[in-house]
Amino acid sequence: MRYTKRYAYLKSHVRNVPERTIKSKWSTLPEPVQDKVRDMFRALERPVIVRHQNERKRIEAQAAVQVVVKNLGKRLPRMPFPPATKESSFEYEAALDEHRSLEANLATVTDSMGLLKAEIEKEEALLTKETKQLHDMEKNAKRAETERKRQMKNEHPVLRHLDNLPETQDPKPAEFTLADTKDSEATFSELESDPEVQSLLKQLTGHLQSMQTNTAPLTGLKDAVKRSQTALTLLPMPED
Image 1 (spheres, rainbow, N blue to C red):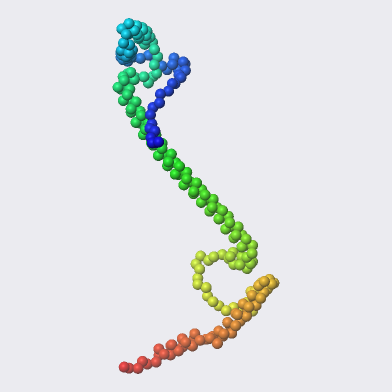
Image 2: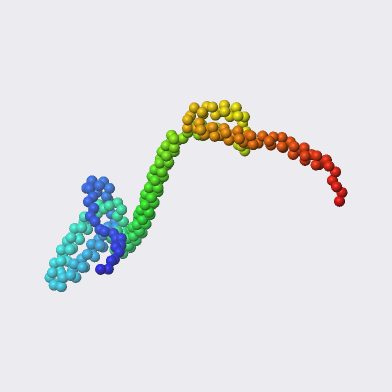
């Protein structure tokens, strides 16, 4: 079965207008427009008369139509019409042109609505995707925060103290200096009560003492090098 795409068209329908609206807002037609309506009434006689081949029936039909047209013509000056009624409403060609124009506008609006619906569906799908990504990011952030809090609970108090130290605005390169053994022992004495770090502190103290012993022979080496360089500069340079 061949599929044919439906097209937009104007569908006729009956509109029930309240009598109060007709009496308050509708009005009679101007005289030129009434003449157009009378011409339309008279044009209705021809198809009715031509339909009958029998002469007698044709005369009877013409007489019946003339009576109806005459009655409508008498009532026409008092008939109320909608406010939007105009002269072109009673011209067949003009009505057809207006009908075609309205159908063209309807097709354009219908196509625009289709494009807008497709764009809305696309944006809604994108919004759903981004919303899901946002929820995943929130879940990951909550999971990371929970893991960070768990690790902070297991973190040693010494490391927490180091993390809380204020940062200097103009940091300088760290200089390596050997502290005196007594000062080191005094500094670490506060931590010796913790059994977890007692052995570690002893090892660090031993390493520092060993480093101090190894660097002791180098004391004064820098001054000796400077004196040697000064003596060399004072010696006369041999001539070539």
